[in-house]
Length: 160
Image (cartoon, rainbow, N blue to C red; front, side, top):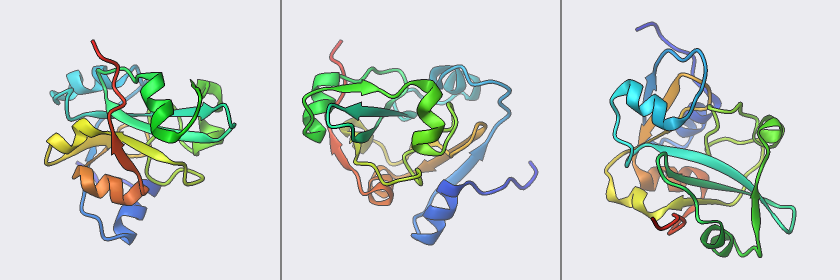
């Protein structure tokens, strides 16, 4: 495969000397993480999506969770000390994060927002997150992601 450009997220990981493996794939349009995992034959449990929310305080927060799961809004709010949260509208994603929908990663957003990674990430040696643009993924250790974003682990999943 041809040499691909490094994303901002990859440059940050390089600078921090955090090991990762970039992975590139063809993506004409982003549907969702489950669709991408199916296309690439990747397990849902270790493939993580990034959600951006705004609290009552008007502050932004980032949540990283398995692609096939849903965030529990009450648990997420508690994890960041907010009364309530709401999802940032897709039209505002670029302005808030610097990334386009489908390419949002918790690494290297425009500003450093408090980041919570679902605790299930710790069950894996490596997890898969967006690389910062469509068609790009980063495979890295959960603790390295946590270090890169200065985040923390918490239970934020909706119970089924």
